[in-house]
Length: 587
Image (tube, rainbow, N blue to C red):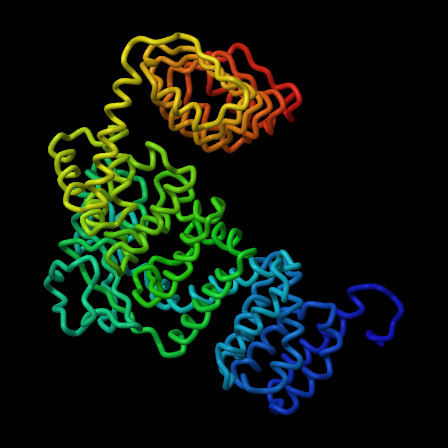
């Protein structure tokens, strides 16, 4: 009746499914053959409807008990495909997610194993370069995250017996104030319970950690070090960041979990699915955005097997030239840790000599992140690894050290001399340091007082023409520069930031874009007048102008300025008096 009724009402198809769910709950002694017959019988009803929660439980049980049954392939495949294509929120129907998870694990139990799973993921993406179903990727990622979380659930559930994040920051309470200790089965037998564990290197040796064992270090008395790193008083109320929770401390209790064989297989299956998702070019931007907040438990991030598997995904992000992808390597907001921190030398997930770190720095420096802020962060936190890799001839790190010297990032004279010695120890470093010295001499000549106060370049001038002009004499007095109607691009910002007295800059009808604006905002703090009329700048670059507090006149006529960004600029630029936003969304 439900299949032949002409009425178009969802409840007509749902009613028999709910009746069957009730009958299955009342009849728990059905044979396996009865189960399969019921599933085959209701299959047509599932073509356009999600199974109700109780029926999902029934399907999950069948996937677990008979993963090689033909019902899994023939009946469950279209049901799971429909769920992945149309489900909007697994939070409202978690049993749909669990059913999808059990279905994928059942595929993994077939003779071909992961090859079947790969074909299923490919079928969900489709044969073209663009997946036509926007919900497939976020739903697959949600299933993977939940499955990986379940692998560590036993230990996560025992966290009430371990120090809280605040206790980790402040030092654990006295033993008589603490909760009962962890069960003895979680403690390695080789380590006495009464004595603290010895100090360990950042990456535990293979004899202590294997592919199915997790070592989680909980800090006891490291509040002074944390205070120094954070710049705040010891015993503050703020939560420590992720790396603080995972860093090895001189005084720790070592807790260990042995993953069951089934959990180990689940981890391998869904980690491989994440790797597969990262191979699709059209899915990679959204995948990077979904993983940017690091949505994994800290137990997973302390597990060498998991971080080694996930390293492939991070490498794919680092190799992608699109800014929307590789920018997700950085933390989602200030004060939080990102993949860049976790996989850099000293990070809890770093298992190499800095190759991935160098790759991440290279792609970030090659985009709009060639800024003082990024260099300052490297100098404060990763100067040692940068110098070590430069000593080994890594060209990206040699360039980083040269930029630190060029932008005066390093103030300590001894550190500057050490960087110079590092650069001079390799051929590529020596060559780039000599080029830096030449540029510095030219910069001194350029910034020497003298020359014109106003300068206008002819129309059709290029970046190369501007660089050639500025290298011909002294421009220390130049206050007004017009590049209107020329062919300059964001690349000319490298030359503009060398003009110390520049107060007025006209870029009307040029190809100057967001990357150039970001660079100007960090170096030309005294700029007062800026004309960006008919340039390709967007909100991404215009927001950077909020740091240029001296701006009093700003022309954004015919740009891609939005109303929200305009309001933000007005609030953050107190001296802004003359603004032109005609022919923009903010007009």
